[in-house]
Amino acid sequence: MAQITTGASFLSYRSSPEAEIMYLNRATPGASLIVAGSLLLLSAVLGFVGARNVSWPWLCVLGAALSLLTALQIVIAVVGFVEASSVGDKVHRSMLYTLGHHEIDRFRSAWDTAQRKHNCCGVDGFTDWDIRFTHRPAHGKYVPNSCCPIVNEELCTDTHKLLYRTGCHTILAKKERGMLTTAASLAVAAAVLEMLGIVSAILLSTIYQEKPGYQLY
Image (cartoon, rainbow, N blue to C red):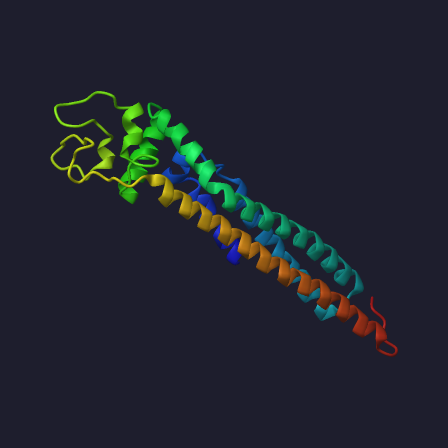
C-alpha cells in the first residue's frame, strides 16, 4: 500500500506548478510505483491462496510472479537512485528553459504559483529575471510580481524591500530528490520482502514434499 500511496502522491505532485517549471515527466514515476504496488498486493493474494491450499501450481505461479516483481522493483530502485543523484543539474537546466520561455502562459502561471508558494524568485536568484525584464524604472529592475508580497498593486522590482532573494532551484530540487529517494527506498524494501516470499514458497513446497504420504496437487 505504501508504494501505491507514494505513486499517487507522485502523480499529484507531477501535475503541480513546481513540476511544470521543472519540465518533469508527469506519469512515469508515479505510474511505475502504482503498478509495482498493485502487483505486490496481487502476489500477496496468490501467496495466501497457495499457502492455504498447499497447491503446487499456485506456489509455482507465486514464485514466478515474485521473481518478475523483484526484478521490476530493482529496476525502479536503480532508476530512482540514479535520477536522485543527478536531479540537481537536470532540474536546473529545465528551470532555466521554462524561465526563458516565460511568455508561454502555462510556464508564466506555473512560475508565479511556485514563487508565491515557496517565497523564492528565479532559478538561482532574482537576477535570473534580467533576461526577461530588461526595462529599468526609476528605482531598480522589474521582476515578476510573484517575487514580492505585493500590496496595493505595487510593482515588484529588484530593490523592493520584501523581494524574495532566494532562488527556487534549491528548494524544488531538494523536494524532487526526496521524492525520488523515497520511491527508490520503498522499491528496495519491497524487493527484499518479495525475495523472502520466494524463499518461503520454496521452503513450503519442500516441507510438504517431504511429508510421508503427502502429495502436492
